[in-house]
Amino acid sequence: MPTTEPPRIELARLPTPLERCDHLLDSPPLLVKRDDLTGTALTGNKVRKLEYLLADAQARGARRVVTCGGIQSNHCRATAIASARIGLGCVLFLRTDQPEPATPTGNLRLDRLVGADVRFVTPEQYRDRDGRMREAAGADGYVIPEGGSNALGSWGYIRAVDEMATQWDAPPTSVVCATGSGGTLAGLMIGLRRRALDIPVYGVAVCDDAAYFTGVVERISAEATHRWPTLPQVDAADVRIIEGFKGRGYALSTPEEMADIATVARRSGLLLDPVYTGKAFRPLLHDRAQFGARPLFVHTGGIFGLLA
Ligand SMILES: Cc1ncc(COP(=O)(O)O)c(C=O)c1O
Image 1 (spheres, protein in one colour):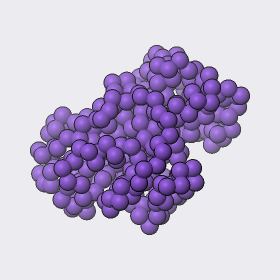
Image 2: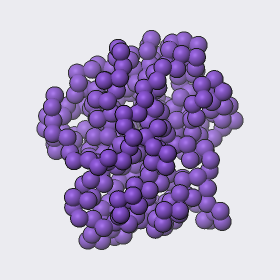
Image 3: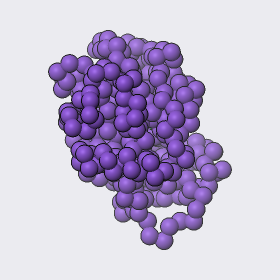
């Protein structure tokens, strides 16, 4: 099992708690991995990925990092804040079809506060994001792909599995997470297989579909085993994507979704966000039997989206 872990810098407050939430679902008891508690500004799953990605940026002598996402991207906000913390510049390509808001809210407000170089692009321009990012990076910049989802970033959740394995009394019957760019899911799957834990991981799609995410996980896993040959390769047949919870689409909400977020908040004090965790939690509320007697929900953060 031991594989040399790539270098990382410490950004997240780890370990995050693994909590039992007995009163949230009537049954079964639910375990919640509180990755919304990786930090205050640096909250959420992206911080775990950035520990590796920014270590690599520093090792390569980068002076700035360049990344991209939706206008309220948690990944972009976390990258901007972490870059400020370690003294790197940060360029963000943010996708929107609306004019720039006069008063930025949520994640965008924090991007601005820490002085990120924010560049708005239309959904059409965003299709060429990789070219735009490479150009903005120049010779001394470091490009982080959308969502930080590549083989190096997946180490964040390979390591999170090791962390959880020291926290649970007995392994859960399933793991459930929101899936937006696929890196968290890939990392969890590789991490569990690496410890020979045969636990199904369900990625709840908040955009795209099962075929797309299966391809993403396969690609990340193949890249990871290429770079770190003792890591296990994840089988496409093991990728479990739950469809049907996108609602009106990425970053769009329905009254039913918002009502569920309120129900969870009132019953447990857990704050889910409208873009990712609020959608990903719904199968646990409405179709929980498929997850077995001890499901584990990875709370991947997103609080600023709730405030946007
Ligand atoms: C709060 C939150 N949860 C879940 C996800 C999904 O993670 P991933 O992009 O690794 O699929 C994201 C980002 O996309 C996120 O910001």
